[in-house]
Length: 245
Ligand code: FPP
Figure 1: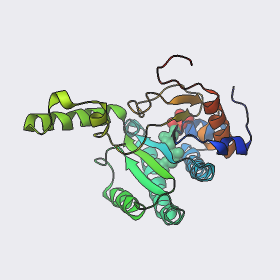
Figure 2: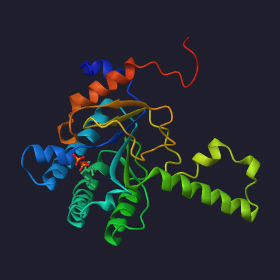
Figure 3: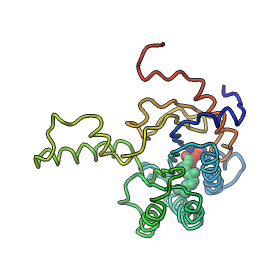
């Protein structure tokens, strides 16, 4: 059960990095007799509000799971709706985010993405790369297994070429080959809609993240929900494997 908390308590010490699995758009729409795309539209608005809340609360990094590498299995029309929404938001939001000091980063494979989307995300990253405010990491066509295999392959290639010694490979070197290189690991990972799974999201990076599962569907996730999740995070006793002090 997550209790509400005052804004000042949250603002005092926000987690550095919050990652979110935005789940339940379809169920939100179904419960209202609406098409799934309506749930995704409201979900995208909730993502916008989450960015704003994190900026105001002083969070440094926000990672949003926008499209998983498994989401291609959905009906073509739904994939197209999600990609159209992405296009729309990239075109509509990037200018404002840039002005707000937000830095955008995209993780995940660009291989199956439409060329115009790749162009837009490259432009968004490049336009905002000097910004020093909130870093918004959009996980798009992202899957942890694929990311980890990619890292292993790149190290193996370097080892075969003699530029890396296998015995020198450690956690730091491995993490530097992941798409999240330079981004601190998430402190708090939130999943909405009552599901309690990681679904191939940040499996390496979330090793010590506090997991907070929220019953609300993603379109109903508000700034208050964010503050409650942060309050829950503060109630946890983070020990990173050490014993209780
Ligand atoms: C989960 O709801 C949501 C997603 C598939 C991804 C999140 C997408 C958004 C927040 C919309 C904005 C996205 C982009 C790419 C701009 P679900 O469809 O799995 O819900 P269900 O489990 O209730 O069916």
